[in-house]
Length: 432
Image 1 (spheres, rainbow, N blue to C red):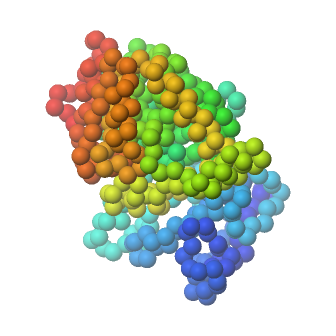
Image 2 (image 1 turned 135 degrees about the vertical axis):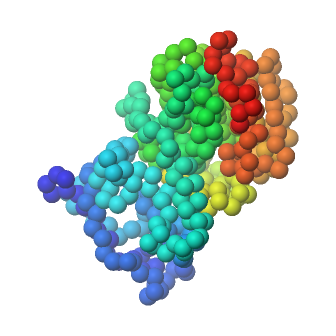
Image 3 (image 1 turned 180 degrees about the vertical axis):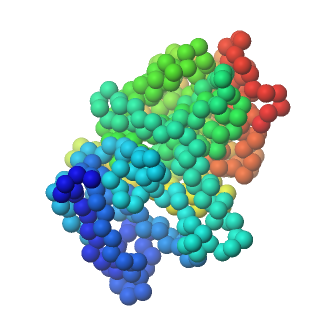
């Protein structure tokens, strides 16, 4: 630790001080019983200060997670903090030390928030519910993957997860692009399933999301996001020369992937859209849309809440609990982000006519976030020669969070296998 390190002090934690938007445990008044477990001093490095906005309070009753709250960024953070010898700087991905802790964090591991209480913190003997939840959270935080960083052409550090197939020869590679509020770790279980069948998987975090650098929840221009995808694709293709590379875009990222594939198909072997966020049923309120139109010109980094609740992603209880407690989940985005999303969507409509890559669209019929009939009509109008649409009865928006992913994973494997280069090593027959 450097001499005179930056530090942050919390002076008290009554409910009147720990005001958390949309996550308040009590009404706006002080309750004597809502107190801290004791004062804590955290010694931070200068680059750690921007991460203070990601601090969360989580309430546990025995082993049951009840509530979560977060500071919510520089505009809404209401922690009582004293900064010494340090000023916030542009956020960057923190390094992981040998014990898995973020350098300088003092208490938060790289997958902070994914860890649930240990046995000595109240787990009931014989009750493995908390253990299963802890395993799920660790997997979806990328616990089974390598954490890597790609420095983008503009200097921003982009975090990505890499799941290696573990085989001497990989027959395909998948690059997963995540949705508006999630991160690459959400593909953890699906990535493990694909790994078992000889497929290498990459899950980059979009800039400003997950563990990537850049202002939180911000996108200055959608062209920069396309450039980031291009840099990731180039990196992966260089690491797997001669191996088919497939781009798999979930939810919001489907807009990005369609535009990218429409103008830069090489060196991709195919495009997969998973619960594509092309025609949404959920949107900002009229007043919030006015704020976006005006705000992107006047206060482009002003934040608005992302209008997505956990129930819109899935109805599967363990995954609902994970989403609610996930500290990397993005709850707000800037006016500029929403404005650029609208611009990207307009570009997507034009780019759809330029698609010529093999296309696979997988969608849950009970998707509450997207308009399934309109998505089917969009697909039917595409002039792509090699296109496949598959719907799953009873499934929700995030297919990776369904109770049984066997058919979903098998459909991806079969589709990729049929389009892989001749002579590549194919998945084991009957494997799922």
